[in-house]
Image (cartoon, rainbow, N blue to C red; front, side):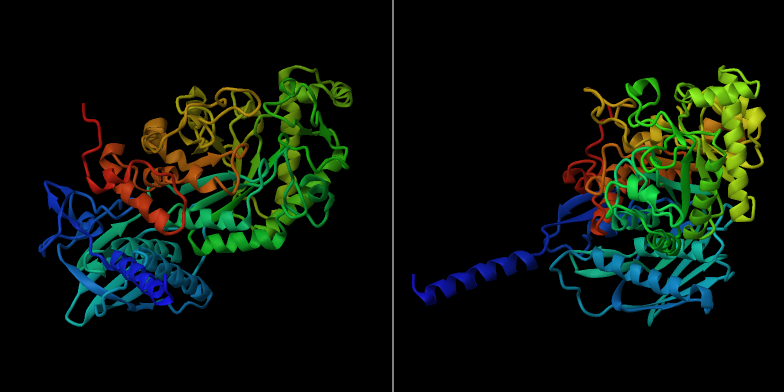
Length: 593
């Protein structure tokens, strides 16, 4: 072949590639009986893209997730908008300036992600002026923060006016998130479009909405954690519960006790510094997510404590006699020096997590057999006139808890709420002896129908649900200490998460339920599988907690499929739920028999 022929062939290939990129879709959509039906788009001006169709077709606005709880009015006409003509007017609060600068950049990143790769937006379109009004400059973010907002959109001859009104920054931020979901890309016309008229009033049902991530069993990079927080913000979840240490590793640097991470981290590169933690806390807050630290004790400790002589049964074998998974390890409550070390850890946690409004002290899976394996600990108990029965070990646990909380209060200088996992200590009668309902919040990890839940509610405790039959996202995979399935199989689908109604679980005492978290224990997950374990199942939790819908998952299914595509557009490697054909053929996949 001659050089001229080769050049000609290359040119031909380039032309074909260009044609493929520029080719118009052969299919569009029209609304038929509340569903978007795929139809041939040739020479039809009334056919629209799937995103546009889902804005108007059906009872719900198909692009919104979670579904708003208040007024939702969306007009039936669209305005073509110019992405370069979107102007934000933010409140002139000095403390919020950096927050709004980053929120604006995030908004534009999300809008650009809607445009199909290699598509060129059609020129023109109306300018959009977004006026954000926030009543309070205060950035306090706790259980009493008002996250409500209102979004109004109105088109006039010159531009599109948007007004977002909220009592707090966090509510207004949610309003901007909703606005981003109202803007759709029309791939038939290569335009960004927005409804010409919108009125939405919205507020969350539950105060506490989030996920718990274990970063001890496997380490997660700061970048992976931030990406999870980005996804939380997309669905208006407001909590990242950081289970940062466990018996497997101690991956956080404590300046006053550097040997904890030196000996306890998997490697020097797999350690969170105080600056790393502060970076995550601030990154999250700008996105409407609060970070709750957990230092799990007195069980779930081991690696890193080798030089302290403050633990019992560390890596004891056979491990099944002393704990639920290897390596075992518990703190020794009889060692007075232990509480000085805890005070140092708590002080640095309080600083790096920037004075959290609530602190999680763990209290999970404490083993009596572990403590009872220590002759020294037995002698300490007997010397005080105690016996070696379960009630005596609960007394020992109560002794630990009282001393630990005193040390936390000393460094925090205020009595913030304390969260504990359900355990033997939260059972009757021990809960009455050792835990104050006005101080402790109990996080439920047992099954949703556990009668102990009613016991706690009747005693006046506030609860957070992470019931493992609906909200443990490590369930349903292979065993790792044996063959077969893991302990909490089967796999939990998004449908089960969506149907996990806290109102049904708590009944008349639902006001004592602060909310829920999806928990991901990381025995079999790391950076490379994190997105797919959380998403889009966590989105189902987001709508359950924000909206508390009375509809079933079937009613939400088509919106969920659209939402999952949006997660992927924004770089979240969310699991696929159905063949893409089902997204393009709404209502034709469900088995209705």
